[in-house]
Image 1: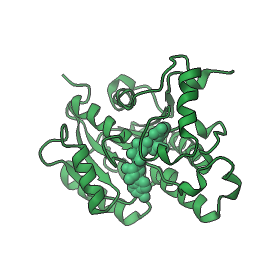
Image 2: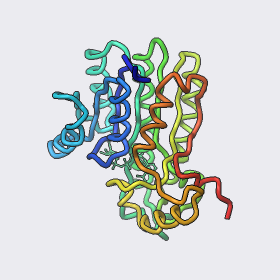
Image 3: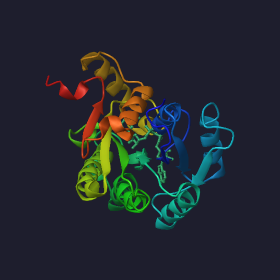
Image 4: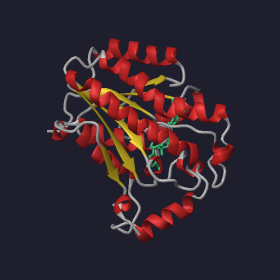
Length: 259
Ligand code: NAD
């Protein structure tokens, strides 16, 4: 018996087979979940998502284009979800965006207003927009999960405006947890250590971050995306029924080191 048998939900944020969302999806499907996959619009994007899902997503996985900076896309995604599922049990928000020209050490002070607003809109506000639609489909409660990083709390060279967006995202999870708790909806985040994906490769100085974690983290290695997938299963399942508003680090323990 799987930990997510009979559970249904949406996993936002698969770009390719390296995406953290793809590893979360693999773990969810292995535990019995049925998932829909909203993805950034575009034929090329759809092809990549389909390819990423080919060995575990079933013959005809449910994909839908959704640019989370557009309310009408999010509305359409949930309208389709309602047709398919009636109710959902989980939503995974594993997406972010910031103009890579400003993800370089020494460039935070130069962040223009539009770059800042876009990063916060796509990477943080979208969680609120998604949660508002999701709660209408969670009459028996549910679990909403977002992905964050250590750069929300500490100034990591090169992470820049994305660190500010992650601070906002983490605050959003707490406020959402506070308000949605009475409906039995839990909202949590996972703070993953660095993992090689399209997004992380856009962060200037990322190779040094990988080396530094390997040297300094208690486990002396970087994490695997599959380890994030396992923690996501915990947060979506009854194993975490008493946990909400939390941020769980899956980072080889790097965040606890003081020196
Ligand atoms: P990824 O590039 O595979 O995934 C990012 C996703 O965001 C992509 O699927 C992309 O299409 C999507 N996206 C961007 N703009 C969008 C928009 N407007 N509408 C809809 N989707 C949009 O990279 P990833 O590393 O798997 O990132 C997933 C999440 O994990 C992000 O929140 C990221 O910040 C977080 N995270 C990543 C790491 C890491 O080191 N890779 C560490 C901690 C947290």
